[in-house]
Length: 426
Image (cartoon, rainbow, N blue to C red; front, side, top):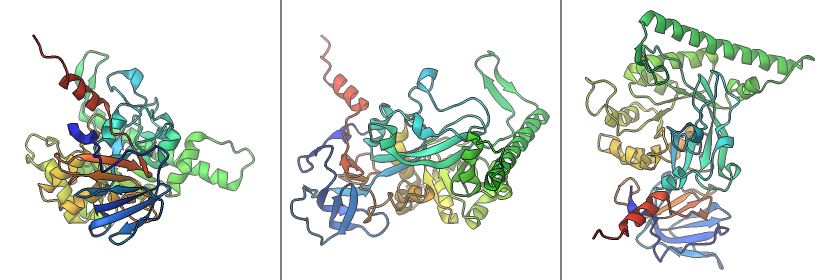
């Protein structure tokens, strides 16, 4: 973690929380959507970008922020976390990401987000302004929500309440671990594991069929029609208004997930992909985007190449598959830019890495008209730095979410200061 990330230079005054109008002057603007603008300016009014360029002038009476020798980037987006839903994963009372039952499409992650989570200020201090927060558990876990990392309430943080429907696609699992039984690792015979898999797939198809019957009954205006929250939540999915995020790690699971989506006529995005195998051309042909997990991971198998995770983003890029990065956790969400940077060292073009944590994520989640790049009409989710945000040595000087300055102080910094100033031992 960058210890000095909370430093705010004199050239960047801290403004009142209500001040979301300003003129950022004389900075290098990295729009992401187009060419960089040296000695450029960004005019923000009422939280939105209304001007970007090298020759625009500051309107009379507008606060001017001088940014000489500094850079401005769009805020980064983590496309998979449990931010605000889980504080300490090992303490059940602090976790609200899992519900009982296999089918819970009615659950919305946004309404359970804790705006006071200690993970939030730590994450945004590294230039991350929005996250996809996901429910977990069961087969259909619920609705993932795209959230800003600033706000007193979840309503203030909300970007898109139902950004995706999260499905943990069944797999043939021959190993399980039980804490409660004390048996440790349990190995399941293949025949039993396959039977469990088939039963789960059958139940998933049946649930979709029931949702379609509900859809038809509602459209027909049947006199005995009774609303059902679970099936009501499925209607945007069936109408392809909401993308379904399907967890699929290996080639077989990816193939099964794509086949399932075709049969049910769904718009999907694959998440957690680690071994796409021969599926990349098909993903490209069918325009299926992918949410990649951390690149700083060991290979899945002991005989895999050591750089399997590092090189995967470049493989997707070369295949023409759109992708974004996610950390799929909370405690290391702050490392999102370094996950992208690591892929650059293994063949991913730098520009593609930067897009994978900004505009690509915004496009996948259907909010590219609001965020993801520095363009007129979009929210002013801006990160001001003294260098490249994908480099660990770079310092975040100031951060704005919807044009409002955000305090970069966080628990990590407070602990650093505490122990830095500890009295020397006698």
